[in-house]
Image 1 (cartoon, rainbow, N blue to C red):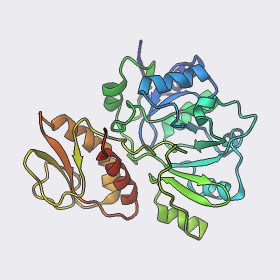
Image 2: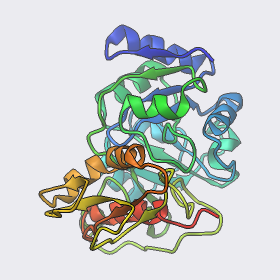
Image 3: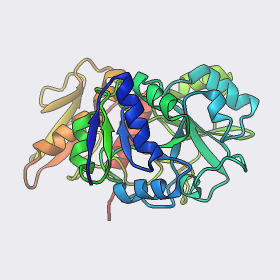
Length: 316
């Protein structure tokens, strides 16, 4: 499949949007990770996203739109959902709300559910692309399903070269973790920890949100038990390096081969997480595995630990 790289320029955004209009697949940068975009109204394009990634069809997708007005064309927003959108959009928060009957979305986007996940990204290039396209873009992470998410163009190329039509270059992703996903019905429930800290969400809502366990049938992306995984085995919460391991440190860990954050900053660790996992995976020689130092369960540390637990999960 021919693949073209589009650059950060007004004319290039228009050309990249034409790829989506033609039913093609376009990888593009957001502030979280690179997404693999297709027209969310085009069933053939959405099916091609699943095929390119090798993604299970029961795993729903997030649609990306330019603003809240656009979002309300596809989902039913309660006052509580709007309050969250006003507080955190554009930004790394996805809201799962009832899908409108006249939304016109491919049923593959919602995986047959009566809800849809929607996000307004903050990345300048993503916003320009969405404005030029003027429609909903279904976009999971631009990597083979279950693998390490991409935060650089090189990561996209390594995983999907030849399977997609183009890449819109947008630099390194600043947040480096996928969006936080909330189900907003009568209550607000956390479906996936991510780039917005739970404490900040609870401060806006002036109360605690629900934190249900992972369902057998995913209600949003990022709920599969094994996900975000390198090619080699991963051991988490490692307090010491063992023979045959590449140690990813957090804070002052003298035996670390590479570090998420030598300063012990969870924000820096979040931004570095997937790039460091890619690097450690490339460093591993035959028989080596990856060990990762403990990361505090606070702020973005909740999302980091979620990704690490899924990376280390049994893949059998």
